[in-house]
Image (cartoon, rainbow, N blue to C red):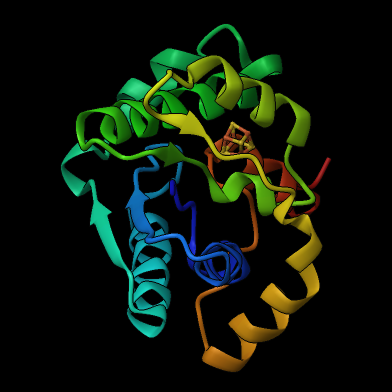
Amino acid sequence: MHICCGPCSITTLKTLLAQGFEVTGLFYNPNIHPLMEYVKRRDGCIQVAEKLGIKVIVKDGEYDPQKWFRAVAHRENNRCFHCYAMRMERTAQIARKGGFDYFTTTLLYSKHQKHDEIAALGRDLETEKTKFLYHDFREGWKEGIDVSKEWGIYRQQYCGCLYSENERYKKELGD
Ligand code: SF4
């Protein structure tokens, strides 16, 4: 399962584990800026994985914001689609190479993301051997927030990229 951050991974992981899946997490998110924000979210993901007893593959070596910016340049109005695609393509590729039966993403947990676009991308990327596992994880939204606070997991204030940080804080700017 592609994991974007600690809080989003709590009820998604719990749901899959309760359904009997053996889950491996993947932290691959070159969309998180700046670097120290990436580190905080990565560490939150690792904390949750340890608490729930799952293995997580961390792709620090592929933290390449330059590549991410090149993927969205001149497509800023549709940047989320390209951002989802980059992360999900890599997830599907790793799942195929690793011989996993399914791949999925915690992006399906967020009420702030374009859920149907993410689900459609997942279906486009699945193969006969490595299927996309769709689940509407948004049903665990409230529980995920409550548990993340209880466990003291880092909770971010913006989606991830510099554009989203700017949107979140632009009220701080004067005229
Ligand atoms: S707002 Fe979030 S999903 Fe959209 S491009 Fe930025 S980091 Fe990616």
